[in-house]
Structures are given as structure tokens and as C-alpha cells.
Length: 115
Length: 117
Image 1 (cartoon, rainbow over the protein chains, first blue to last red):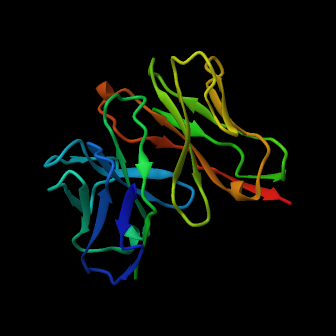
Image 2 (image 1 turned 90 degrees about the vertical axis):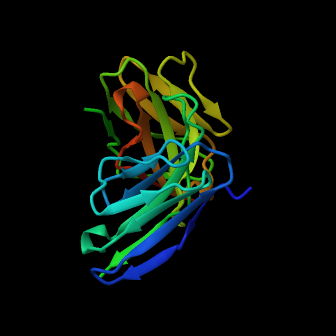
Image 3 (image 1 turned 135 degrees about the vertical axis):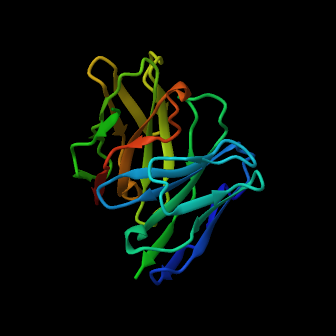
């Protein structure tokens, strides 16, 4: 039982390049999330999904796209990377059974640098 | 607006002693959840403990307990018998009812705990 895994762990991009971050979970969770963590700002939600084939915008969605073609996978794409997207990206998942008690479990993070 | 405040940017504690990490929150919701996560230097976010706003008893998980004072809107994390491996960043977070349309947890800015031998 690996929990939530993220690929890659580190990546350096040049401005304008594109990339996809992959998140996988083996806990049969319905909900999946992508957050970014910037110094002094806690975590902010980029996009989330409440089930296979669904996605929705979070607090800071601009410049990112997502897809959830399979229940266990949630992909985050950057079409044209910008230096402002330099951050640590976390994927999380949860059962989605009840709102306030729904514990989110996080992956190990991806450290992305955009030059 | 919902907000989590962690006023202690850094804390030191001696090994085997107890330590309290402060968390205060602001919300207009009647029901909400409070979470604590640990982020060691390796970077992952580890779920520690949960407290629901309607729970009358303080949550406990092993050496972790949550001192929940609803009237004061505080949800402090207490770590008993600190260990060197407890050195990490600790985040307090809050959930909201889904009727608000909000799925994200609201995180505080974190407290860095250093356990000294």
C-alpha cells in the first residue's frame, strides 16, 4: 500500500516549456487534489476532482490544467511554464464521504523550478 | 473569510519534554474540521490528528493530542515526550462544509519545531 505517489520528485523547466505531473493513489479514494506550497503561504488549492472524469477549479487555477481519466490517477499540466510557477506541488486524496471529517492524505511533493 | 493563524514561527523543546503548538482560527461556519499535519525536512505532509467542531472530547492519537477550545477558537497541538524525530514543520488546517462550495483545506503558515537532545 503505497498511499499517494507523485512523479517526478524534482524538475527544472525553462520558461515556456510544458510538463505533466502525475499523481497516483491506491486507497480507492474518490477525491483528489493538487496544491502548491510557497514559502510563508501555506498550501493553496489549484484544482480538484470529486471522481473519475470530473475536475474543478480551486483557488489558484490559472496556468494549470488537470485530467482524471482513471480513478487512481490525477494529472496536473503546465502548458507554458512561468517563473511564478516555481513551487512545491502536492497531490492529495480523500474518501469524500463527509465534508468536515474528510481527511486528505498527501503525496511526497514535486519540487518544480522554472528558469 | 476563513483563516488559520499560527503565531509561533519557530519553537524549541528539549527531548522528552512536552510542547504545545498554537493554532487559532476564524470561521463563520457552524461545523468545521481541524487538522494537524507534520512536514519533516524530507518534504512530505503527514496527517497527525483531527478534531471536529462538534466533538466534545479532545482528540488524541498516541503522543499527539489536540487541545480544542471552541469558544476561544483555538486548536492547539500538544506533543508529549518529544523525540528527535518530531523536529519538523507543523501545519494547522481547517475544513469547511461542502455546502460552501469549498473543497480545499485552509492552512496556517506553520510552526517549525526543533527538538534538542
